[in-house]
Length: 54
Image (cartoon, rainbow, N blue to C red):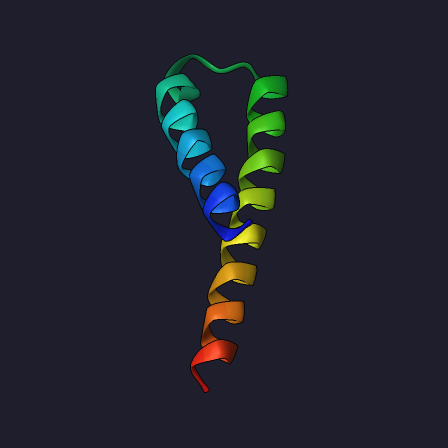
């Protein structure tokens, strides 16, 4: 699951970089929501890995 979450976050980041210059306000809002979700997933993965190291 971690691999899927991080992979999707990477794909989203690539998509975001490509569309930022020409995005409408509604597209930016949508993108901000998706990036927030991806960051939340990445932080969850990092926390989970940190707990396993202890």
